[in-house]
Length: 199
Image (tube, rainbow, N blue to C red; front, side):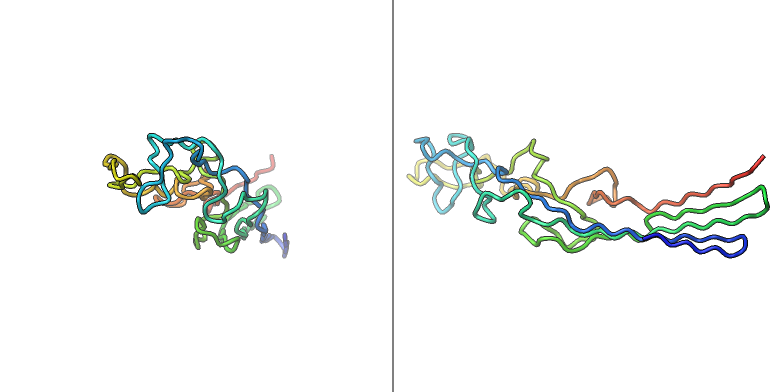
């Protein structure tokens, strides 16, 4: 929505942009073990496997929804942006203009899932690593876990799964740095000033 008001030499133009949450989701996001592989024996007390001997070579359903997600299964957050422009005719030859972009830029809503955040700086989600780095699925070696037959203890694996490999989807880390901890597709506040001189 764009509004314009002009009185004498002053013109103001506020604008509001709203983008409803788009759809996202993909059926093949998560690698898993091949149960036909004889080395694929679940670790004791876990649904995980010894990833060294049982690599993830098949696609499994999303572990958090229990199904192969349809295209567009989930809804991205909504985004609201407010901008403002003002111009003033100093004379018949000189006009000053100021543009304040993204005075308000916030996101909310969308589908609430295990990987989503209630953070106004996160405006969209994508498959983990944009499809280049897969999540761990069900192949992972918890530190100190023992195989089901009790003969092997895994000691060199990480204690925790890194956050960006835990879920099949992650926040889209766009080109704008919002803070040191969180990137976003949100554009930062910007101010532009212009003097237009007619010769």
